[in-house]
Length: 369
Image 1 (cartoon, helix red, strand yellow):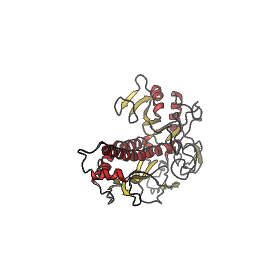
Image 2 (cartoon, rainbow, N blue to C red; image 1 turned 60 degrees about the horizontal axis):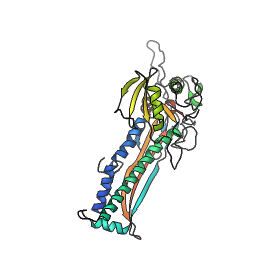
Image 3 (tube, rainbow, N blue to C red; image 1 turned 90 degrees about the vertical axis):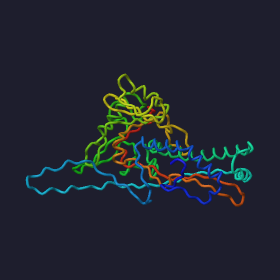
Image 4 (cartoon, rainbow, N blue to C red; image 1 turned 60 degrees about the vertical axis):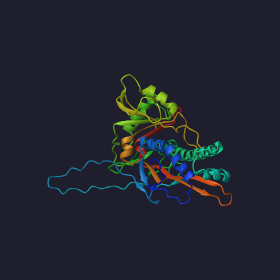
């Protein structure tokens, strides 16, 4: 990705970007912000999102049933044909994000005429530096919006407030985190299950993160969520605990006890990109710091620093329960306003996050009780 601007998998080829100096500034700024793009990608992977190219706006995803044991048969009997039941459907909606910055005509003329900066006045160098910083800010803003939307899919999941994306219902019509999720067993009997605290164990709903509430959350995911067909969800071997940066301190104190370290995926420094694996009461748990959790946002809905969630990432990934739809993965542009002669640089990105079967493998607590 370094040094190249992409629309999906094609390099941006914009005829409006003609000036060598400013074109170079675009590429340089993109190179400098490659880590910002990588951070959004890394967090997306840690949260278990499956990336899908948004090629058709009318695409719907269908939920699937669970594993059903084969029927007994008599010797010589024709093998029965299994029935694949079609689950509920749910679509998605791409959201565009973008911003622009302006370079005044006078500043642009100084920059454009400085083919090189050898001997250039310090004011020209400051203009160029300001222009580059503005471009980098645009790209950072785009990727911050990306990370916030990832987080909002979890934190807005306690109520149905929208048709798609954060706050949307599951394919069966319930909020992502609820105590009345529906399933139908192999005999056609309907039932409900929960993926919130307050039913399994002693922890109240929205309990603060403690050793007790963490154990109750794990026990809930192990014993309550069911697939259509009535079987318990086939969970993987590792639970991932999502916490804010502030909450990570308490989380490590809770599970980082003598002899609990089961593995380590990165260096020793505590930061948002580190995953440590611990043995917590016989369960493997990884801590994942979610940097946007509890942060301020124009859109709101990022919860507080007390929010926490736990999920079985293997199930989430295998079932493609969380999906990141990408339509335009980042587009830089530059153009001139013919009236004011000012030069504008912009950055645009369009994507969507949505959930489908995540309610069977994730649990969230607001941490307020």
